[in-house]
Image (tube, rainbow, N blue to C red; front, side):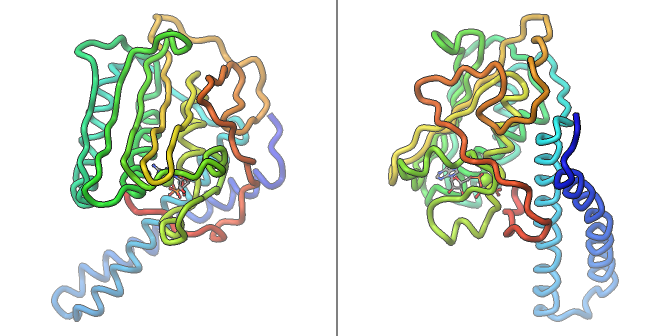
Length: 283
Ligand SMILES: Nc1ncnc2c1ncn2[C@@H]1O[C@H](COP(=O)(O)OP(=O)(O)OP(=O)(O)O)[C@@H](O)[C@H]1O
Ligand SMILES: [Mg+2]
């Protein structure tokens, strides 16, 4: 597959940004370590801001690198037979401290038994993390996040369906169709500053590359439900996509969007590194 000049430049830039960033982080850590008790509280506070922002920048670079891989068709997956309930439980467990810190409640609803799925566990876990981190970010204190696992039926036959449902701010009807677009953020300006608008587009692409779908239903002021599907394990690898064209999430070959599925927003070109706002450290 031929890469465009923009795609090559963004891939190169993100790669070249990582090493100096790691050096900055390392230098800060050594400085903190060596300074011991000589630092004032204010010094430590200033250093902690610098450290926190290196973490944010690192996460942003990772996201842009993933996006670059998706756009150039270089994202590889390693699907294995997976227990979907275990995958969901472990991912939710990993996020418990953040959920508790945000003073939210989380609940998993799953059947006693569920067929196994054929997915890349790291990438699927990351998609779920992106959905749960959004639910945490957009749900006020005291709210509930429910992660539901179901065996697909009807048009979802052959899949396991996972939903992340929250009691948060919800999404306006006009915005619902846009939220999977690259660098798209909607809703309140304060919350926008906590991210880059890449989490959902990456999550959806990861799911689609593995043969699943992702969509959302939402009601402003009441909450949102983000849903994705994972193909059942059949003992056979699914056939490769028919084309190697680079497509935006929501339009991958083999997708059969259901009635509830919303189209993807316009994928933007990758902006120059550093031109995007901060990402939350927890992602
Ligand atoms: N659970 C949710 N409730 C309400 N709005 C949401 C929810 N999830 C996503 N959104 C809206 O969709 C937008 C895009 O989400 P996305 O995860 O792609 O970006 P982000 O969270 O702003 O930044 P990033 O994930 O890159 O750190 C968000 O900015 C928000 O406006
Ligand atoms: Mg997000």
